[in-house]
Structures are given as structure tokens and as C-alpha cells.
Image (cartoon, rainbow, N blue to C red; front, side):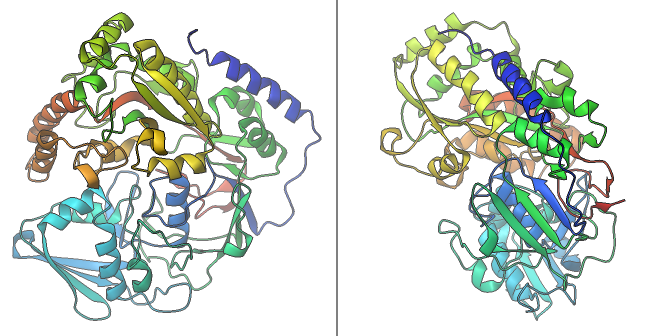
Length: 531
């Protein structure tokens, strides 16, 4: 099979863009009270604990609030919380809520809501699962106060409660917090700066949000990532679902939309020349991986998973996803991103030594799994997902697997990846997993590093040695010891291999000139206004 060449896709996109720009420009609507925003993909799931999909996460930050927020340097600060007291050597935490915040139905946010929400969040989240093991009791003290009693100190408590992504600990009304995330709720009753207008939601077309006039922002801090006051300057926020990159680019340049969350690298030269468009890099980039389903053959066998390593060329994946300019991506990436304090060369020769597809084929043959059937989930309507899996399918076939390229839209992929049935019964074997790089800076936040079986992220790996090393990280006292432990984790990671790191690439957001107040750390349409 010929090698995948991303140039064809880029040439097509460039031609489409030229056609789009030939249209007469349509001025931005005079209604300055509406912000038109193009998310990276469609909003298909409303419950933020039902998926790690970023459109749902971003939707969550508009509609709900967290007890704490974190800034772009990951320093936590209060949001719904007024503050906390730590006693008994770090084993007793007492939290106090601010007086004033209400849910969108006017009901006050109470400690009972916070406790129920934390209980719902803990089984799903990587931090939360570790906290749950150390938690003896969580109880309501009164309307504004609740207490956690631990059997062992949990140092990253505020990092956990304030994390911005995968999964944020949003505070829901108590009755919503009682809903099993496996059966996600479809009604949105939040407390955040925007209300979700479900009556105008059209999947695949648009999602609409209305300013919540009774929102009470935190009184202190500088807006950054999810820290500081969250302000809604626009009365109405319209998410416009535009899967085609050239169409989104043309709409941004023409003023038909105001902000495009994640621009396409193919169209970067065009957008850089557009006089009314600003391109900006707001975060540490995207960590890309090939995730295995370990429940079924052939990837239930670590030796089969490791057989791929010798054939993986991270630069091939990165150039497909983000273009040929090597300043826009990084190769040589292990289980921690390149800027992580835990990044190391331990075991990394598995990906950086000379590449040898024949050796990979021989390794697979030694397992007796040559010709094994593999179902690859492939979302063709999301550019980076499409490009990365196209390379992935080609790689799997070259190594010797019989691959079914399961093309679908993004929403269908999200539904199917949760299916634990056999691959030929609606399940899957491999998919592309993309997360903001800074999520993976430590073992605490690296969702894909968890190998605790049924409680792990989709793919459900089980690796006791890797889990034990991760657990020990929470009790390490200094940076040098953390670095040593990080190297040990990466060595074990390449033995268990719950996923293959594909590299790290940097994205840019694009918005109309004149839009000010853009937050650093994550693309979030809050605090922005014209002029």
C-alpha cells in the first residue's frame, strides 16, 4: 500500500479556500451582543462526566462552575469556594462556599450540592480515584461548609478540585449529581456565566448559550485558564458547527464568525495574511496517541502492542496532523510531554532508535498474530483525527494487521469508543486519543497512563506495576525524587504500553481583530469583548 501523503489533503484544502475567498465578504452582523464561535468539533454529549470530548468540556465551563480554578501556570485559586482550612496533618479539610452564587433556576448553591458532585466525580477522574482511596468521610456541615476526612494526606487536593479538563469537578444541583455518568443527563441546569438554550440546539449545526444575569463571579484573581472572574460580556453565544476547515477559514475572514477555536495548519499562510484575523497560541499544544483496546485480541497481549513500536515514526504522524514545519510539533515524546518536569529519555529508544518496519513485522510474527483483524475508529469530519488515523491505518497494515478502517463522524466515534463489546459486535481495537499536553505533565493527570482495568479510560488496560508506581507519586516529597520516579514510570510504561505516544503538536486559535480579553491557557469564550 502506498505511504500516506498528507500533501494531497493540504492541496485540496488550499484550493477550497481560494474558492471560498472568491465569494463576496459578508460583514459581521451589527449585533455586537452576539459572539459567533466555531468549536473544534460538534457538541454531541451534554454531561461533562460522560465524555472527555473537549466540546463537552468547554460547554461545561460555560454552564457550570468549579470550587477552585487554575491559572495557566496551574496555580489554584477559589471559584465557588470562599476558602478552606487544613488540619490534622493534612487529613482534615474544611471548605466554605461563597455566599451569593445560585443555579440557573435561582436556587442557592449549597454544600450538599458540592458533596454530591464530588462523589459523582471521584470514580471517573484520575485524581478523584486516588482521592477516593484516601477518603474516610465527606460530610455536609451546614449550607455553606463541608468536610473531608482522609486516612492519608492528599497534597494535590486543590489541583484536583480545580482541574480544568478531563474531568473537571463541576458543581451540579444535588439531584443531577445523583445521575449515573453511565446514563448521562440531557437537561442542563448549571451555575455558570451562560445558560444552555436547549430549544435552539441542533446537533451538527449549532449550540446556543444565553448570558446568565444572576451569575456572581469570584471577586479576586486575574482571568487565566479557569482562574479569576468569569465574565460574560455577550448576551448571546452561538456555536457554529463547521467541520470543513476551508469553510470555517473563509467564514472567519469574511466576518461571518468571530472566533475559530482551532485553526487548520494547512490554512495558516492564508490566515496570517488576513488583515482582520489574529492567530494566537494559547496553550502547550496537543499530546497525540494511538490507544489500544486491551479487552480483546490482538491488543490484549502487551507483546503485540509493543510490536508496533519499531515502526512508529512520530514525525510522520505530526506532519500529517500539523504540517511540515517542525516548529509546529515535537517528536521524541514519551509518556510525558516535552515540557513536563518528568520528561526523560528512559526507555525512549523504543521510539527514537532507527525505524525498522521489517523488524516490527517480525516482532508481530513472533507473537503469532500476523493477519489479526483490527477495527480502527476513524473520525473523518475532524481534521486532526482524520489525518492521524489515516497514518495509523497505513502503519497497522504495513506491520501485518488486517485492518477495518471504521470511518464515521465524531459523534458516532464518541458513542462507539465507550462500547465494551467485541470489535465485530460494535466495539473497537484502536483509536486516536488527543489531549491538551499540560494534562499529562504528571502521573496524577495523565488519563491514559491509568491502568486500573474497568475504571481506566476507554481501552481499559490493567497493569499493576504501572499503577503501583503511579500511586507512589502522590507521596513523593521533592522534585528530584519525582524526576527519578517519572523515569521509572516511563520504563514500565514501555513494557505495558497502554498506548503509543505519537508526538506533540501546537495549535493556534483564530479570532477577529478587535476581540479583546482572550484568556491564556485554554480557548474559552469568556471575558472577551469588542474593543
